[in-house]
Length: 420
Image 1 (cartoon, rainbow, N blue to C red):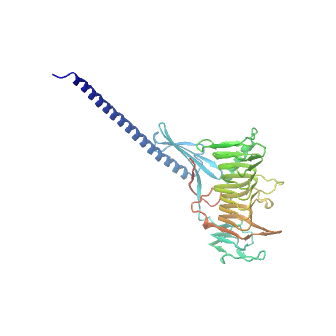
Image 2: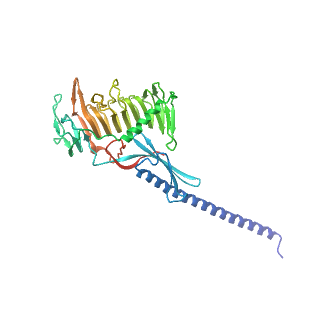
Image 3: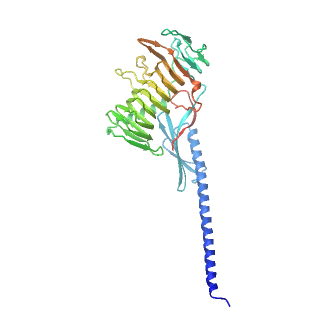
């Protein structure tokens, strides 16, 4: 005869077995859910990479307004693609999505260097030679006037560099420099119009960070002089002004664009930014601009009363990126200038159809495209003299990428920076 207590044992055993079976079902469901999630993530990551490759390979503005693309002809593998002009570079934004799962990536794009066009120095042919003196080094290919290059005796000092004068191949230059990209120039011109809004008011800036996955944040500064002191700005931000913008030494700028008639950077500033002015940019001593930064003056209208557009860089400045000066006018008296102070170090590119003023101990690791050189010694001005200056194209990093505004940019694009 079975005891009544055995029934309780059977119930307990059945309860334990039920709990174990339920746990196995839950574990199987959880494992299946995690497997599907991992599978969707891998698919999204592959689609994201495909979208990035599409933007890098594109050579037109097909994605400027944003576009949804089906990678394999179905809704399950779709990506949203968009490109944005960002100074002299481009921004790519890719969103891959499957149902409610989404992966996003923002990155900047730039161009590889066209080796056939690359040169340490390009000086147009104005029927006069270029002269070198002092401790000058020219290393890399050079496009020079047919009258060539020669040694010179200046301020009681003879040429003390390599006897080859140019350590590289030399070619005959044309009568004018290869032009800047007119499409990129036109795109930059549009940004200056942002400051002309009739509702523009001066804003007090303190700390702003804005994602590149969102629409650019445009901040009109109005007609009052703006001083960015103690300001921290990062990301997808465009500042535009109708007058002078002063960047304080303690300002923290990261990836920001500034458009103004005049821009002044105070001594000791450190940051990464692209600065564009219509009239002048002045950089104080001991500033550091990290790659990829840009300084550009662009004058689109002839103004007989205005001074020539200019970029003036103080002593001991370290700059990585692109420095250029553009004036739509062909008047020789209005040619723009770039002036480098003593012990300035530039890693990248310098371009001006006008004058490049140099001082002692200037080091340019990259290339120089200029209409003429200017060297001032006391009350004497020497034209087309390169004195105590190093221009070394081979010292530039092989990973350096150029904005397509410069004529040495190849068609091939690459990822410049992963932003988000």
